[in-house]
Image (cartoon, rainbow, N blue to C red; front, side, top):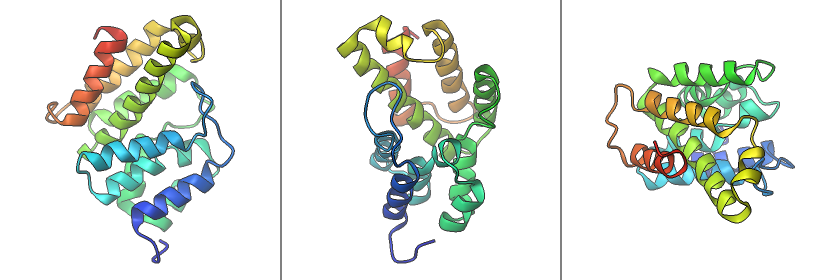
Length: 186
């Protein structure tokens, strides 16, 4: 790890460089906006620096050439394990297979991993909600790889995995449920 920087500050630097020139699917903003939001939600809810750093780094292995070994070398095994739990397997797999993996992976994961995944989904769904307000339902849902009912299945299944064997009253899980209710009448 770069010992000259705080772990969270270094995660911001590392993720910013890794996601350079990437854009968000839903809105036309830099990709790094999403990991920053995930990290901020985690930090505002009292998570430790490893969880916050992993939240900021959660898409690095999935969406860039970096590997889990890079994360472990730079940030330690705990951060690497959190990022691993929050990452989809091989992007060459079918969408449904990748999503089923996430649902199963997070079901028995640590609380820290569950919180990171929940914040990832909160950020995605809140961005989608903002897009629906700006551009309408049809344009917003059509920007995704699957239609609304399939997205509902995925996001509600992830929520159920996140609250499996933990206290569902954590503020992050309550926020996740609230956005599910808003978008999908869950």
